[in-house]
Every structure is written in C-alpha cells, then in structure tokens.
Image (cartoon, rainbow over all chains, first blue to last red):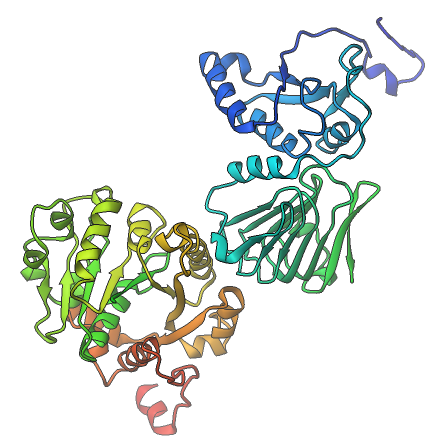
Length: 263
Length: 269
C-alpha cells in the first residue's frame, strides 16, 4: 500500500513522504432528514463524552437516507457537527446530487463499495419541498420571520419580503428564490437555496445556493454588501472592487470562481 | 381605545426618557388622559425628569407583584391634571418584569387612559423587550451618528418580530423616527449625519428633529419636561412632534443652521 516516492536528486521533493494509512473514524449514519431530532440526540451523546468528540473527524453516511431527501439539510448538518467541535470531512453513500453539495461544502467524497447498489443514480431531483421547508423554517426561527404581513411564501420555495430587512434579522428561503423589495440593512442576513433578488440597497449579507446549487445567482440594484456568497464561495466587502459598489450587479459562479458583474 | 406607545432606541443616552416625558406632557396638555411608565427598573430616571421623585411610594414592580394597587402607585403631575407617572423600582432588577404582569397592568391602565407611554431602558434585553411587547406605536429615538443608527435598525428588527402584534399576526406596530441632539452646524461641516443620511438607512416616518440644546439639560436638572420651555428650540421641536404624532401637518424646523448676524457674532462669538 505504501507509496514512497523519493527523489534524492530533487531538493524540493525531499521535504515530505507520501504514504497511505488506515484510520478508525466515527461514521454518522443519517436515517432521515429531521435535523432537529438529530441535533437533540447528538447533543445527548456529546454530553456524555465531550472530550471524545472534540476535534474528531467524522464521516457522514448518506446511504440510509430516503431517496431525494437531504440536499437542503446538508449544510445545516455540517454546521451542527462543527458546532459540537467535530470536524466533518467527508461523505459516503450519497447520490450524485448529494455528492455535488458535499463537494461545494469542501467535503471529501469517500467511495464505498456496498452501500451504493440500492440507490438509483437519480440526479437533481429536488427534495420534497414541503418537508424541507418545514424542517428549515423550524431551524431558522431566531428573530427572523417578520410576521405573515411582511413575508409571503408562495407555494413552497419562493419567498417575498416587502418590508426592510433590519440589522440582526435573518431570512431563509428554503428550497427556492428570495425576493426583497426593500432595503437590506447591514447586519441583516439573507439566505436562499435558489437565487436572491434585491430591489433596493443590499448592505447586509446575501448567501444564495445554500444547498450547494452552483448555478444560483444574486441580483441587486445597489451593491453595498458586507458579504456575498454562492454555494459557499464567498467574498467580503473588502474584496469587492469600488467600481462595483452602489451599482446594479449580478453575482454568480464561473468555474467555481465568484464573479460580480454590472448589469 | 387607548394606544400604547413605546419610546425605544437600543443605544443609551440618546434621549429616550427626555422624549417620554415631553411626549406624555404634550399629550396631556392637549387634554388626553396620559400615563407614562418607567420600564428602566433598577435605574429609575423618569421620576427625576418629571420632577416627582419625592412623591414615589409604590412603584411599577409593586403593582406587578400585586403588593399595591394602581391608584396607590400612580403619581399625578402637579402641572397637568391629565398626566400620571408610574415610576420604576430602584431596588429590583429587570427580571421582576413578567410578561403576564406587565400585560395585566397595561390592560388595567387602558380602561382609563387614552395614551400609555412606555419609557424603555437601553439595550435589547428583557426590560426593553417587555417595554415594547404590547406596543401599538413605537418611537425610535436616534442620534445622528452611525452606532445609534445601527442600534435603531436592530431595534426595528426586534419590534417587527418579537412584539405581541408580530406574534399574533396583527397589524404591525406603527414605527416613527425621532432624531435628537441634531446639530445643523456640525451636519453642514460634515461631522454629523444629516436627516437624509439617517433616512437612507432607516427609511421611517419622521416624527421630528430635536436640535441639540442646552435647554434639555437645564430642564432635566430642574425636573421640568423640556416641552414646557416654550422659549427653547428643543421645547418647540417637541411641541411639533406631539402635533405630528396626533396627525397634524407641521413642517420640520431646526434643520438648517441659523445665519449669525453681525451683532450676535460680536456678542456671542
């Protein structure tokens, strides 16, 4: 197994050895998409042995998940594990859509021989929107959701906000696009699994393609953002060129590089 | 139906208590039965500004804990028959404010009074959230500087999500902006944010602009709401604010620096 390429004549390569090794790692088997329940259960486990889980790399096994579920919860799960001090570093047993998301989250795709057979290579089937929306709205209920009068959820994914999004508020359009027809203050946070459209100044943060959708875009009439991100590829205001500030722009990924263009 | 007005800001020292006293006095002078409540439990400043600190026997917390009834705790203002003050306790902390207790007191007050003015403490913790929970209207007091504007923005976010009206999906709280400590000279020289700068971020219904004025400090120290000082610019500006709150159309004043004449320059420097 050991690969040990040594080239005594080349100074640059003499600095390291490349070897293969086996590690014992905890694997988290996902059986359903209920992150809330998972969080509670995981919390109990961690409490019994906090030292054991601290800085422990973990692998997420997706083979037990029902078909077509899990795309949207994935970023939340990774955040949850990190919150408990674990280092989620790879997935196995996912379908191509799930693997794409994992890749977008900088997770390794671990090949697994047995688990794949039962799953059909079902590409980009959207998760059951209702179920996903329910789970996500339950997890993002800080002081977001400013009442029914201001936020309208048409069908499942699409979300329309007609009042200003204030500093400290978070709005998450689970499974679809988010449109804002007012200003977004600095300190506010917009998240959407799809595109984000802002018909006003964007002074806060906007994160599109939360579920790893690399084709998501952000459109805004007046870019003054603190941070913009698409599928985890982000840029902070310091790195947004001056000539693009205060003008209408669209933000998208081009070969996984975040680009901001005037419209 | 009585209306519950919360005076809030997030940031401290911007003029919430001064504004509460002025608004309550202004409404009462117009014949509205008004009560002003100090929610700043533990610090207690409103009674000083209203000049009734020596007459405090029972306080808001006593009423919430049913150790005293409302009539025992309410202090009638000596200058205006329609105005009552419900002082805060200095010996308790804000945790003594329970949602049910506050709700019960406000419900009882709303039987008798046209307007209930709630003077909120600074911050976004329990005391402030209790002060705004039952509000119908909110006056967000803001100074023309960035941190105050940011805190007001945060406060507006909380108002639109953590109030009774938000939780019951009723019509949202009416939000108003009051700019205080406005200094047109410093705005013109670019040292201070202008009304337009603030409105670009907050975009609210502007209830008034109170100029920076020595009269405010003098009035506070004397225990007289500054609105009673009709000769001062701040007193007049608060008078305009009350009129606007009651729906009158009053042009905004004190927006621009007065050009100093030769004589005043010579004498006042």
